[in-house]
Length: 180
Image (cartoon, rainbow, N blue to C red; front, side, top):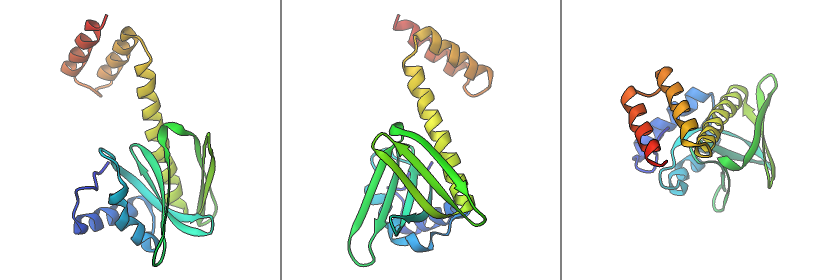
């Protein structure tokens, strides 16, 4: 996850090039959108990955952050189309692939979006990353709805798996027990 709001133009170019290579996207047709992206990021919003594809007959940049999926289409000379879906509002996200290209389907309570002609590997990587972030967000929400004892049990499991230290476990445990 990358905080792009405070990067210089040169740092952004390097970051975008690296991310495009990792996901398998050719960001050639979305350079305007990538340059505009830091202007629309929220506070503490972090870039995870992006890809480009066709939606409603235009080439769009589709960006996954820790808070939402952003759809951005900046016109040739003027104009800007921007949509976003908060991650906690997404009902499902899936991918289908052909020989070269893939399609991403996103469903939420307000409707659905289909992004076509995405490089096959980029589409699969984007959806995989999105599913991981959404699952992580859902797990956090689930923990917030549990009793302190259930949260302590989950923290113990994280400690046993080596995902948190013993000190972190004891610190969180004592704070939770203070709430009772």
